[in-house]
Picture 1 (spheres, rainbow, N blue to C red):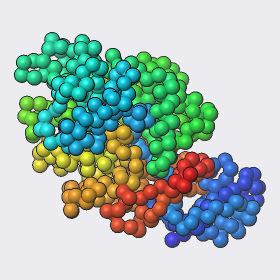
Picture 2: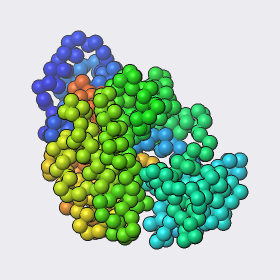
Picture 3: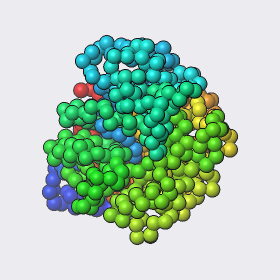
Picture 4: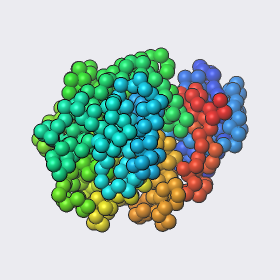
Length: 551
């Protein structure tokens, strides 16, 4: 039914009487927005020159109430609130487009050829960096090794991160520059993979990656700007109007503020300070940055890490891995060390968002949050909440902790997840329905560039539990799937809620920002299996068009 809510009509009457700002009406659309828990449908959207929604409703009603409004024909297309990605890495997304990418390689030989080709195209690069490799897709049954890069490039250092960002693959030159030998001990929270003779294989897991990272030349300011520009363009293309950046550095913070000042942010950024070290000590002196540049930027959260990733067996499990009984994965900190960081950030008024993949990692963080005083509650989040013990799932609701989850992780991981954790623990993995059933609000994201930032790929995964080839036929653990409206909510209103922004973003209600997209298909009335095919035609932020597929 079309929206005729009283508050919207009051807003219309007030604005039409005062005419303080000119209005624009986008007519002839199949519009949808949430209002509370209900889905509202509308024919037209009105917004003012300040970029705020005036009303939604029938075209004739809005035209009568706003006779001087400018009209734009929506062409009968579907109009939705702008998508909010609750977990991404903005600069990494842009950098990934400038670096060597191995995501599409089908096997090790393909990867080696891609490395050789990239080295040939960029002979002046001192380092060859990139990644997105996945040994599970290559059917190796093991990690690759340094010698397999040396076979194609050995005169320059090569450093390639795994698709999940929690393991790296180095050639011998890179290991030498990082001074990694058979005598180098594993750092806390990390592992240097070694062969039967005790020599480094070239694979570094989690904290051990820093041994190489610290000798890689940092990106220049120009390279950072180029990466940000590329990322913003990509996000606009896929209809993401706001993103929660999971790990903002000092240099990134400066650029985000600069771009906001100059009106160059075409996607809103909700920033999470990476860690509680020097940059946090510096920036937290002024307290959380609740809003900046007309709500285009904020820095009011902190990102911490409990463990690694499932694919590299760095996720911390309470019992050994089912396919590697010699390891439980890695907890990065002791319980007391982790709590000290949580408490430090929370006591200064920051939301605390902690990466936790394995059931041991999730439990440690839940236990830490449980120790906080009630006064330190700030919609704290667990990022990923990927493998959770069944008796820990209710604790999210009891403690007021938000699960921040990425639907495409399930369809990307289903080729190995049950191998890693077994038939019993998988019941608490990627368990969206279990969280929704108990009343938890899920904030959905993608974890780009680990996954594509395309939110319709995420909605497709959430609803079908299938890959884009339609496998498995009935969906992977389909009992945990979402409904389409639930998936829309977790990429809009609930993602906004997870950033304390539900009063300004997430729906197209009067007074909120006019962040919206036009798409080529009606997502609410189409086969769920085809949702990933949806194309974004236009993206608007604060009432300004920032992307058009026709330009």
